[in-house]
Length: 416
Image 1: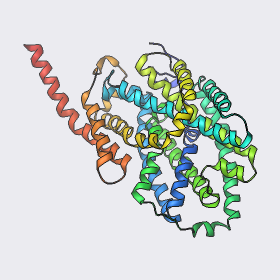
Image 2 (image 1 turned 90 degrees about the vertical axis):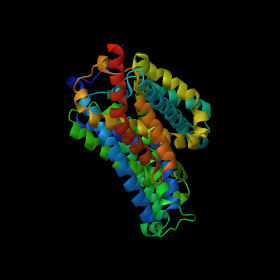
Image 3 (image 1 turned 180 degrees about the horizontal axis):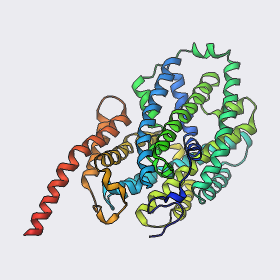
Image 4 (image 1 turned 180 degrees about the vertical axis):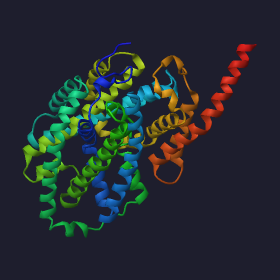
């Protein structure tokens, strides 16, 4: 199998580990995404001021806890999400979550490219297809340089987005009469609170499941936990606030649209471009790791291929965004639940990465994912949370029972 400095086929060595500040910027770059603003806009117009912040804070706290577990495991072992999945799903069994996770990230990449090209094309008159091609190529080129490029890009982008976006929100709120006026706005149609929570958690549960791919570079697992919580609790919350303020003041959820309406065209393009670029490069990076687990090929080369596919399919993915998000919120969370459950039950196995000691396919893990999806779909409550718990609990209960029985049957067969 090929290896590269993305360490797609084994643990990250201590010599390549990074400090908490660098990883914080990378993870904030991941969570700074325009799609979260869309969700924030829907929440802001469907909830009261207090309910909005309650839903966002609870939802992002749940996301932070979930990603902190995965971040701790990733930093402790130095392994990608996909290599971690080999312990619970088996070597070939891990191909299914890798394909699912990697494929969704290619989809998010395509959505992001279109989310940049369409508003910029409308504002400037430049052909949207040309913008899609250029932006897709540039984003694909930068991801080729791995985690170091993601770090540098995020260090530039995160402060720029936070400062320019906050200034635009200040102008929008000021123009509508101040914060008191914003707080007094009543939703025309009330959004169910449980649905609002599901939207918050579902907005980033896919990328959150891949937290280990980034924080495995952390020198200290405790720092990785803090990084994950800060990124989702702070970064995602800020995006929701941007979206809600824009939707309430000007009827536009995306901060770049708000800026264009305010006459801030150049800052709008900068914020939109950096916002999407950081998240898209993280998505493309993670997708390469996923397909590297399946094929054994270089994740760098696979990221380039995935970038081309995502760029070509950008408009189709953009036009089917709502269905895509609904699919993600149900299908992705149980994978993370199974990985967490297996680590908590079998921590000693993770001290040394040795593929020879792993099953080929662990059908119990696949069954647990199916149960998790069903739990998210059928049980009352928060869909992604039910899916995570459904996958984790069913795996914790069934895996010791069914795999012990399978092992005994194999021993009897061998003796006979």
